[in-house]
Length: 380
Image (tube, rainbow, N blue to C red; front, side, top):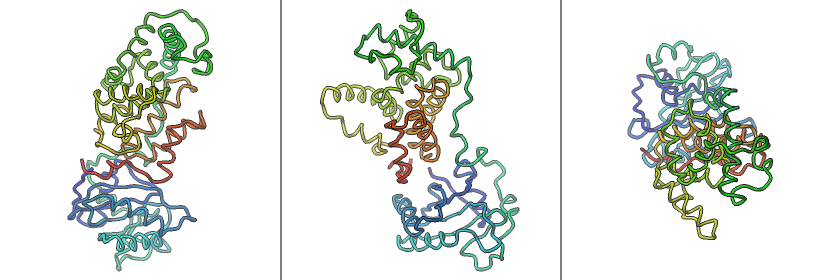
């Protein structure tokens, strides 16, 4: 997103970085691209490990900046716990970044390191030994910056599990299982309930009328996916939550949901029809498939954020064996929002339960390769 940075000096600029990111980075490299003196976003990545080729790492970083068509300069900032006693930390990394910026024709406005006991600019010939005092950054910090507590990893945990609600959702899932079997027969579910639900289909097989009503909502899945966006995630009724767990556990419906949440209900209807046709042997439309790998129209971040909130809630409520689908949705939505650190965490949680979970493994490969959605490099 575009952020106007009016920094009086380097200390003021560093104090604004957490406000641009929305959190305080730790063990991180932050790149702030500029266009005509104004920042056009901020990119955070983990600091490279000791064995990493710094020139290759720097080239990858600058390649991401160069994908921004308006970028004509950048500032870099290293955040670490390392001491400044023997010089500013990660000087070799900064040197590699400077060479890559020069090769790309990008003006480097500043290169800064914030250590555990000081800070300074690698371009400042007058930076004292041991760096400048950290107190200067605190004094320069804006009074009302929208900074979330914690660092880049914060917020990637699921909401606290409400045991009573989770038990209600599990009960609803059992009833929903048999309701769908009654309505659809074996066309929808394999004959072994344990294979599908990990045991949640055991027990009373009487059909709850509320379960039948919930199952009937599958007649208009796009409408249901829109309704959950408008709901309060923290108070989703058990059958609403159970139905979403059920849908997200099925790759075809999960992908319809993600494509729809990235656009609108009409696109969800197209995705659902395309899925039906694909299962009959037709080609899947490229413009719909592009969304899943991060190309095409820029999604509305507010829709993605609402969808992520709901997916996080139902992942927390779902029985463990049914959780990977919702977690994978959390991972993809986080990735689509540019939160690769969170995406990796959710995908890893999913593969901890189901080691070869398809979408989760795809998201993990995206993160490992540093692949971001194309729309992350386009202005809103």
